[in-house]
Image (cartoon, rainbow, N blue to C red; front, side, top):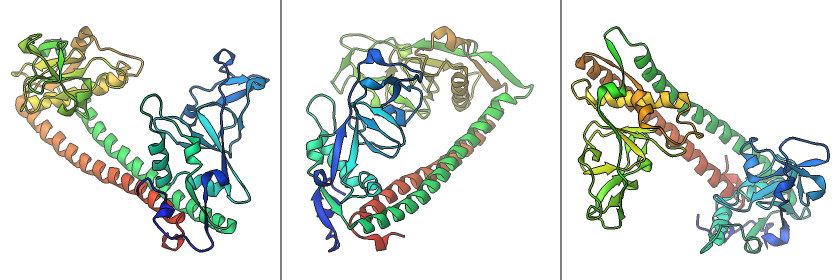
Length: 409
């Protein structure tokens, strides 16, 4: 659908009418109490300050003096996220005083059923209309109430609105169940592979070695600080954004001006190198291996190159060992959001286990590669299923608010 209203695409039933959103619903913005009044434990005379993030987590529960509160919401009220990204989130379920980042949708109950309004606010065409109208040349995007009030709103008779709500409640409950199953299957597929990987490296035989990376690598070193250029002939520089899903994504790389600064040859990636993100919240500890080398590139100071001794490793085995090490980093807390750096000394102390015989390493790689391929196929199936279910939601909402209920199964 385009950003146009769905009712501009389809002729509505004769007993429906179209009114500007502002004629059927009032939007009441929140207020922002002074921060020095905030407390973080419940107390008599205080009320919860409801913020957008509170609909995602209870980690930041905040309370303010009741006399400082101006705008209140209850658990059944429909709340709209005013700012982004993403803007126009539709929420409900919390009670308290709501802040300036939230708005309450108050329907004219003579014309609009509240549950009908709740579902209508989730229609794809309305969301896109709000997103388009909220764009600013500078500053923060936000819902423009005066523009939202102009949106053409389909209004069937109240009994019909209630029928639509019943159908949508049933349809979306079924979709949510299907989504939960697909998400669980997706998680199960990932966990199955991780369990197999863990079993290989933790139930090793007597013919395995266990050594630190410092003992089995020819090089463990951070990259160089680049001098960036927009010149496409500059040297390719990899940064921590380039390492994702155990692969190197060159689309996030930048270019370095060699005429300003030369780069030590050892900072250029080589076939078989392990790359470890050594800084950054959310990216710390991610790993990838250079498995093909079609482009000359070096790494910046946010990445540590770990270059294995080729006489010790079948290189693809070392790549899988790195992925297992990534899991160890995660479990140790070094890769948690509170950490911002993996020092060279810490990387050097990381332990890698490997069979002494190269042929055994190759056999393990064959097994892991095969299982990984099957796991990715399953992940692709479940990911597509989730995407299809989201599209189904959009389609059902479009049909519901254009009078096509007979086509909804």
